[in-house]
Image 1 (cartoon, helix red, strand yellow):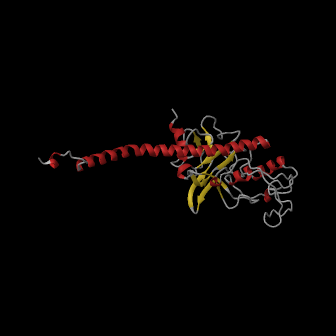
Image 2: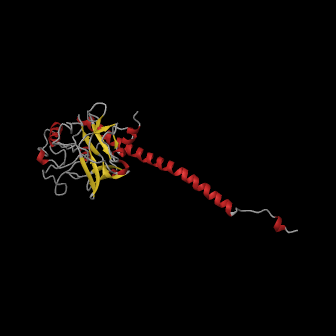
Image 3: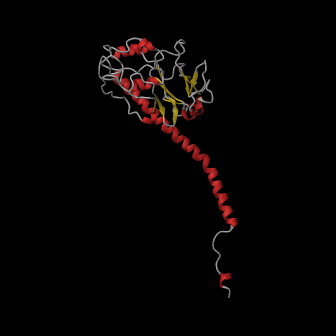
Amino acid sequence: MNQQAGAKQTGFTLVEVLVVVVIISLLIGLATPALVIALRKTEVATMRIELSLVEQALEAYRSEYGEYPPDFTNHQYVIDHLNRLFPRRREYTSTGDLPLLDPAQALVFWLRGFHPSPEYPITGDTTGNADPINGAIHTEREPLMEFSEKMILGDDFNLATPGEVLVLTRAPMCPIVYFDSRGNYLSEPTIPKQLRVSDNGVEKGTAMPYMSDRSDRFMNPKTFQLISAGQDSHFGNYNENPKWYPSGNNYDDYDADNLTNFSSGTLGEDKDSQP
């Protein structure tokens, strides 16, 4: 008797292997879109948490100093604010002395905190040189938030006149833009609340405040707006007419991905959820 002929055949045939490969490919094809969506939701959730940390720091600033900081779109507002906080200061006493910051750089300027000196609360420079290298005497600041190095984009966090901005770690090339509610960019056309953003010559759009469909007013009229460009790193194109939340009137394709401190999701998600 031929024992080899009667032995049980083991292993897979070529057809069986091909069937398994096809099934696995189909399963991967079905799972990939769901996986992409899940990863995107995770990244958006992470960015919202980081944006919330900045929002909490601004609330802590108000609790400490009695009002929210100005966004540098109007330098007189900055001087008035500093006069209330530090009437004895001997630095930045006029608009011409102020650093030329924008509504993104303003966040780091205010949230890094102040020196305890009533005369030099911003630079800590008791020599009057405003020079942190050559002989200036500095004391420690107490920042209003614990800054993650990944969220700071700039040269030197400790400079007296900073140019740093805060970014979300999932959108590292675009700053978080801060607009306070002082004034109204529609009623003050000579001092518009907007910020054109570019990176190494690459256009990243124009951040501008959003208006409320329900009140015809600046969103968060008593507080402030924080705006992030989201995962596409583009704020949206400038529009001479207001952009309205949550209807999305005057939005463009880039606005839909933006995150703010007044939206429950991205602006596009909030728009789509409207009845």
